[in-house]
Length: 48
Image (cartoon, rainbow, N blue to C red; front, top):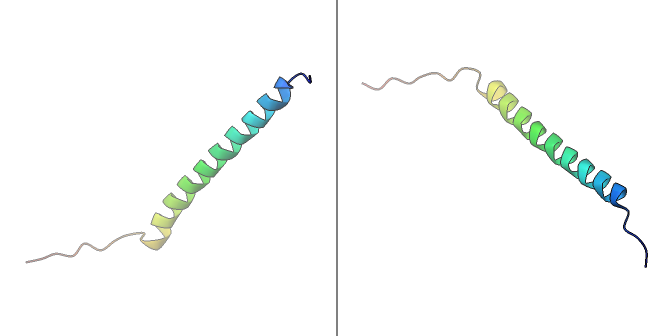
């Protein structure tokens, strides 16, 4: 029976974690940039 390659498994898990974290950071950047670009200053409508 073949012996498991724990170093390979660990490396794959680290790469997956890093990729997931990068995607999360990218979503945060897009969200923050999207809000500032679309509506830099929203006019406040006053109701009487």
